[in-house]
Amino acid sequence: MRGSPKTYDLVIELFLPFDYLAESVDLWLIPRLPRRKRQLGREYRVIVRSYERLFDAYYADKLEGVWKLMKVFKEDSLPTRIKRLEQEKSYCYSGLEQELTEQQTIGLSCFLPDSDVEREDLFFALYETGVPLALWLRSRDLENDDMSHFDHLLCAKCLLDHNHLIDQLWLKRKAAYGSPNPPKQWGYHAAMLLDNPERNPPLNPLRFGQ
Image 1 (tube, rainbow, N blue to C red):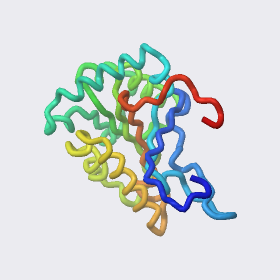
Image 2 (cartoon, helix red, strand yellow):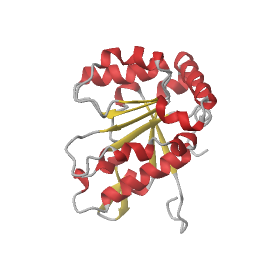
Image 3 (cartoon, rainbow, N blue to C red):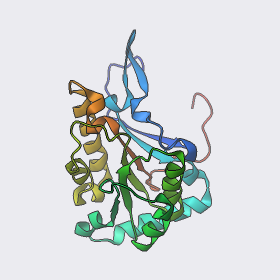
Image 4 (cartoon, one colour):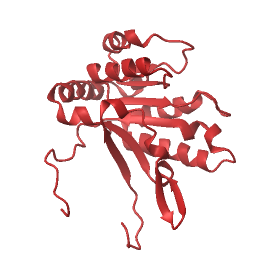
């Protein structure tokens, strides 16, 4: 893109290893003009993906199974397959894996746990059950802490068309950046893992210049 007069409508998918899935990639700074930078998630649609699910056959198979299951559900029943933890004041993440399995879950929404142990339990449960979608907030200290934001992103239309889901998340991020106090806004802290096995890059890495 550098040096080109054209603009690009990009979706940036970052494959992160297990220990870095909670990284705030949408807040990473990228250069715009000399001495000025802007957040990656403000400029582009950004989602997190799993490095292990791309290269590890065991986790790739788990993901593929749930992805196929997701397609057999009726459109209006898709929101009922989302495990909604953001409404819970307290939750024991050690039992999440079993609950996701028993409820045939295709997605999860929550506030990101504060402790490292609970975060590990959260992401391990996603891996072991193959759940492809997770939406979380990094902070509870918000001015517009309204659960309707989750509802708007986890509706049947967004769950049926993930391109629409990605667009809607980006719009919420942009709205947050346009506010007087972005760090207090819902969209500023919203992050999403969305692993689509139908959108995998080649496994053989390209050499520099290709």
